[in-house]
View (tube, rainbow, N blue to C red):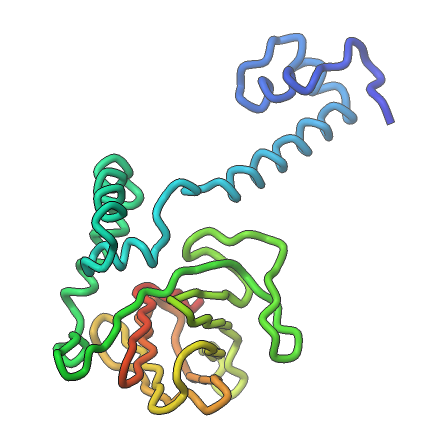
Amino acid sequence: MTSELSPEPTNQELLAYLDGEATPQVVEHINQCPYCRERAEQLARFQDLLTTRLYRAACPTTVELGDYCLGLLPEERASETARHVAECPHCARELAQLREYLATLAPHSEPTPLEQVKVLFAELVHGLRNAGRALQPAPAYALRGEASEPLLYQAGDAQISIEVQADTAHPGRRLLLGFVIGLPAAGLQACLTQQDQPIATVPVDELGNLTISNLAPGTYQLVLRSPTAEVHFPDLEIG
């Protein structure tokens, strides 16, 4: 299929149209030409995909910001992160949220000389699709905290997938399903809170599975807690 009108706009002219900078002739052509209107829509979808993939590409990861907040980064990397945070409002806001969350942690979650509990912050990697028990990355990239399918998080050497489903046993409520690899199974628990109020504490079984049922939609805080490590999900949306 080709344009029924001439002259046919170039890709550069279509991009200018998407940016609101096209000439009146190009605007009139696109309004009258289904083929060029479809070309413009395809370019818009491509631009959206690039924006999604490159969103905060130069920013430190959530794990790095967590390590910076805890003073665990090497000196050179800590200096680079400090300079970046001073210039990036997104990272400055995220760092402030991490510090605020750390201030609300219960005293027993603080590392002691005897326990040396390692505190990690889960970083959203991308969506996933479960094939058997293997973690399979989905083609689509997910922004931090935004996804409509099961999510894969990374925290150090650990990987955690989280899926929210309708709880058929409790109409209108939600079921949280998790699968954990890379953390010692012995003594591992999942602790869910909301606005500092405990909601549920469940064990993670020897295969790495966890289930929390009868949840109202909302924002929660999830902690995977073992004798030697904690993985925190400060803002877990259950919708």
